[in-house]
Image 1: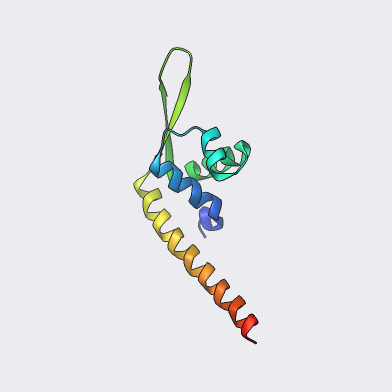
Image 2: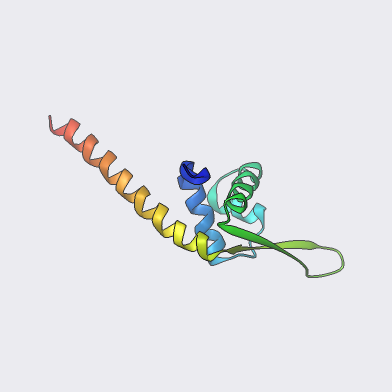
Length: 103
């Protein structure tokens, strides 16, 4: 059983944002997803733990430390796999609900 079996739509959203803009701050990610900064931080740590993303530190100036989030090859592949499974699951839920309405 994989550690990342409980990947949610929020995880997928973060993977997509990181793929598009790895320099986005956790605050920017929170604003774009509607999640709290704490939840963004929690999800990022979980994605790092399973190897889907890695974090690089760099200094843009003497005053500010920033992070760059990088989707790993494993993260890219799993993002595709998870997204496919998520879509299949949502389609099954939709079909089930539709059958209830038809009854």
